[in-house]
Image (cartoon, helix red, strand yellow):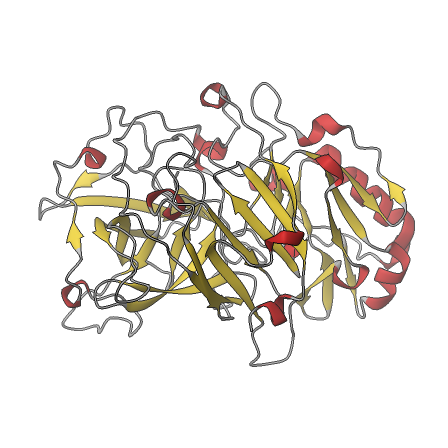
Length: 451
């Protein structure tokens, strides 16, 4: 999976395209069913000057096809970890990394694979960020040398491949869409939950040159995601509703392993596509959901079900992504949503206004009347499972007194997929049950869930 960053006005954290990881099989074998760590994920605002969007590697450049070795299983033993996360468009979790642990803030991203942290780089003229990780203080830190298999892909078909740096260490690179570059070395390090509980050494990126001050917790289905390497059986999060009060960031929860709230969850099975390597528009490592349709108010929109399923080339895939703020729809679905909104709201929509180049359903002023006219929106899935977006959370405040429906056109991002972003996951438990290849949903007051 590779990461590419889009600096768009309302996509503050999505990461796409780290150019060194292959499209690999899902992490559902030999998972540790006893792991259960619950930890609060505290709310922290992303810098308003940093607007980042993540997408999957295969959405842009096709699936990487070189293989890697399987990672060693961790020692058996139960984890139990819960944390709060900070939510202000990005979901931020603070994790204890190294021995002894150093707290690192990371973007929770189910749409990317490699996890990476900001590493301490000692420069005579420029002190490192105070929150960066200092490898010299950790006894469990080690670097990957150039002769490691990950540094020698069998098929060097990446835009920015791994390479051997001047110190004979394995170097990786990824880039932002605005041309800026972030890079560092591949390393091994533990997540240390307590004196007696930690993960095995995980392969991480140690970024020494980056325009971001936070790392990424990659949680997709790839072999180098945190979820796979730590062999957890499941993880879940609860995204709180947004608040506009200055200085206040909403707080939700994040669980690694068993969630005590899961008895009330409704589950749908993930879709699997063994032929995904030959589907150029398919992300085989994403969490692909069996979406059926969309309702606005009491009306079921006339969108054919195939619009939400991958075609022979992979276009139409519907994925859920914690690293994407808004939801994105392919044109056939987006046009139907817009047609119904125009019918209900009419002249109240701003004429000729497109926010971030992808969203054109926006209004000026108070969004309450918009909600009254449009009603709730419901995303429909198999087994009768639904995600309901209440009318009072249909619009996102994008600044300047403008509010936009939290849906954009995916083709304006250069992709042909549907993405359910975290804006439409507010006050909802979302559980990724890796062992059973399913995703569960449960309504919640996520601010209270963090207590």
